[in-house]
Image 1 (cartoon, helix red, strand yellow):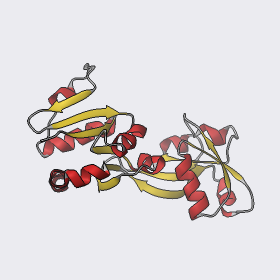
Image 2 (tube, rainbow, N blue to C red):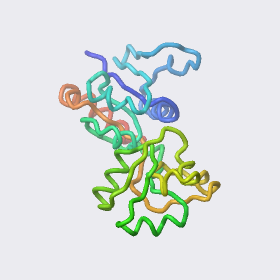
Image 3 (tube, rainbow, N blue to C red):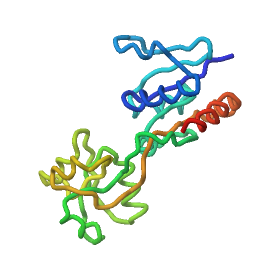
Image 4 (cartoon, rainbow, N blue to C red):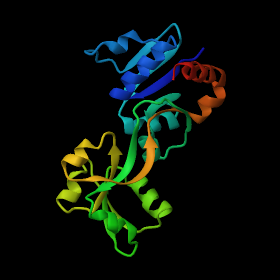
Length: 212
């Protein structure tokens, strides 16, 4: 039997995923060791391997078959646009992708004749939303750090970002102006693995359904 390999997005998502896997009898003790320098963790008995990756890399590992299965946020799946199967909403890590800005920018979003600037870590999602759903031409500025700063220092009129509680926005005089889509942790599967390991993957999915 070959190993099934999981790529988990580092941080909260990996922690939550492992807790969920434990409920269906999939354990990997060595991953709990905070000090470990290991990169790949193995459960010999169940023939499973696990590794942690930066969220943005998880879809890449899965598309190319370096991992059979990945756990990553819907935002990353949309932004990366990789060829893979999204097979399950794991129901945790819930938040929303939104257009945010000061109240004064609300009007600008209604007028399609004025070019507005949008700062975001998610240029693909922003582009798809403004161009394909709203048919509004905007200038998209990619940032890597805290995008809330952009409207405050007049780099952009609005931002596209993930909103959990909205407290950072409120503290900085910004708010949600439009909702783009709901987000949460999803399980993705490599297209070839889905065919070759159909039975094992489907069993895993049906086991997970009992605990979600």
